[in-house]
Amino acid sequence: MEGGPVKRMLLAACVCMVMCFGASLSMVSMVFAETDAYHVGCVFSITGKASWLGEPERNTVEMIAKQINDAGGINGRQLVLHIEDDEGDNTRAVNAIKKLIKKDKVCAIIGPSLSGTSLAGVPVVTQEQIPMLSCASAAKITTPVEERKWVFKTAPNDGDAARNIFAHMNLHKIDKVGIMTDSTGFGAAGREQLKAICGEYKIAIVADETYNPTDTDMTAALINIRKSGAQAIINWSIVPAQSIVPKNMKDLKMTIPLYQSHGFANIKYAEAAGDAAEGCIFPAGRIMAVETLSDDQPQKKVLADYKKIYEAAYKDHVSTFGGHAYDALWIIAETLKKVSDDPVKIRDEIEKTKFVGIGGVFEYSAKDHCGLDKDDFSMLTVKGGNFVVLKE
Image 1 (cartoon, rainbow, N blue to C red):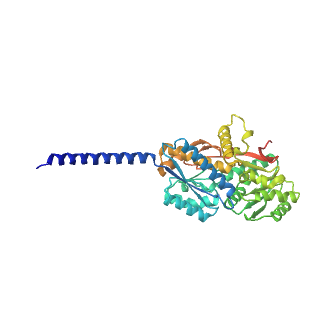
Image 2: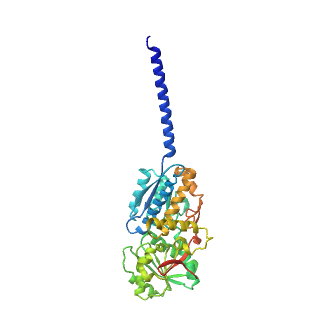
Image 3: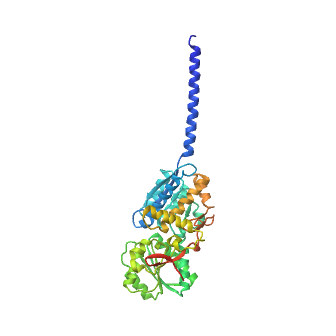
């Protein structure tokens, strides 16, 4: 039949083109798979009552993600952050976590900022089997570990903060204390720890006052503490009362020592209190006084580098809260480099992680999903409007 060879040649050419096109598609798919982004979720209290925590956390992870992506990403893949603002509200936090898992398909979650919002998210990540690195402090976020398989945190335990405070009181022969705690999840958990631990240090709680996050005058509570015969005050809070209490004490001419919790580790609280903050004592991460550390301190270079880069980028003071996010994202980044974005493998790898970070020298294990201990705190005070390591 005339033209048969030509048709056969055309047919062969078409088959070859289809095969080549198919091979090209396979190569494109393979390249796309290798360069697909890693998706990590973040839930912070960027606005609302706890914005002093959430804003530096958001700033920090954005800064780190840019550094990572500008350097070529992780395993040649870009790091994409999906950041949600829970406004410090438990329901919003739960909804944000669900969105990140169901819609954004994240492989891990950093945050939330608060103890209450973190605890609210625990059942969700546990059910969905997505690892979460909370930036909050309450010990119960990661304990008991057998019920918190998918939950880790980068903030030190509130109980260890309490131990540092009580140990300092022992040095100064203080055995009667009045406590003040806010009604947030952080305050409630701190109150629980203070009451549980004080007996170990032979310290009696002779006054126990609580207040709402929106309260603007602590005078009545302070008068009750003065009547109790307390030799010192512990104010455990993450709300503006941290600045109000020292002001009210100054007005009342109360001169007994004021201890704040590690929630005080943002210089803005001291600035808001002004001269009244002078002499406040509190446990905190070493980022707040990095200039006073010896050069051989294991964290010093990490701390100094973070402080320099953050303050240059945002023209604002560094804080321990941003440090919690720093540690969480770098831990995730290092884990992604090793095991990619399988949530099960990420969880298992975090549990083996040792990491020198802002919060301290982390050593996670199957029995410890916090990774820090009492020695990762330093006792600080306010001197000349600055945070400095407390000298005994």
